[in-house]
Structure formats: structure tokens, C-alpha cells
Image (cartoon, rainbow over all chains, first blue to last red; front, side, top):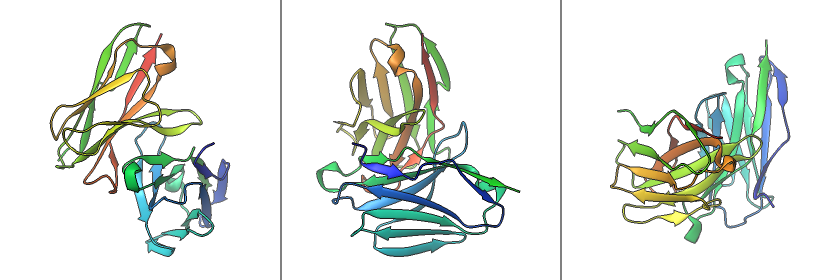
Length: 113
Length: 112
């Protein structure tokens, strides 16, 4: 069973809209969560990380974490065509498994003009 | 400051051949990682090194070996390549095991 599941894509939104990317995880011991963006043929690059329940905002991006529901999301406001990419959610279990990031399968986002 | 570098960028192997993928980081990070990425599978951890002198298996270690040569370098070896090892391989590093991981540009490997 995959430990990190992302909402099925691809996701298509018009320019200027809010894109909502969702992720659930099965390991209650997970300590921290990361959102990476990956352009086609490129390596993943970090967008945001979140450790605590609630919201964390950085520019147009907001990460939300709900540990009780084992749910992480990423909202992209005022979506731009340059946001078109695959978004990867990852969790870090901590404890003896610290360092072992578990990634979801990714959600492809397309922002159309 | 190059970050994480990987060599080679692309490699074609025949079944049974061996090769070593090289990774180096210049960020003075303690932890380093090797992942493979296959279509629809996301990134899967092969091996990681929490600190210099230590290595540990990840989710898919079979068919691979690693060496943490020093703090900067972490290599991945395929002793006898198989077509199932056709993939894109990413190296990453982080300041600590619970820190943000930064990825190299990747190595595309094709095993015929």
C-alpha cells in the first residue's frame, strides 16, 4: 500500500484561478511534509515544507496540514502558465526512519491561458 | 556553488554490464540520498546516508550498492544491470536527515 497518495490528475485550471493539490498519508508517525515542483525533464525543486498543523503561506503558495485527518494540501493562488508542472508531495517519517522521504506519485497541473 | 552534481547525465548499458553513478554536493550537507523515478511511480528511495560513514537501505535497494566516499560524495553502483533498472536516477542531499532535500539534475539510464 502506497504510504502517500496524491489526488489523481491531471489537473487543469485557467490562468488566475486557484489550483488545489491534495495529499493523504498513512503513517501517523510522519513528522514533516514537503511539496516539490518538477518540470518535465528536470529535477524536483522544493516549494514549501510544513511541520505544524494549520496553514503556512509563502507568496502565492499555501500549504495546509491536518495531522488528525492525515491530510496535506497545497493551494496555488493566481495560477500562472509557468506553474504547469508535476507536483510531488512527500512525508518524512522521523524516528528511526528519519531521512526516508516517501513520495506520492505526483499530480500533473496544467494552467491554461 | 554548484549544489548537487551528478555524472553521467545519460548512459546506455547492456544487460549484465556494471556502472557507477557519481554524485557530489558542495553545500557541506551531512545526509545524501539516491532515488529512482519511474513513470507513474513517483520517486522511490534506493539508499541513503544519514552522515559520513553510514549508509542504509531505502524502499528499493535490490540490485544496487552505495559508497559514501567522503562528506561530499555518494556513489551508486549497479553490479549487473537489468532492464528493470531503466530509470531516471536522482541524487539528493540535506543538512540533516530531517531537513529539506535538494536534488541533482538526474541521470537517465537505459538498460537494453
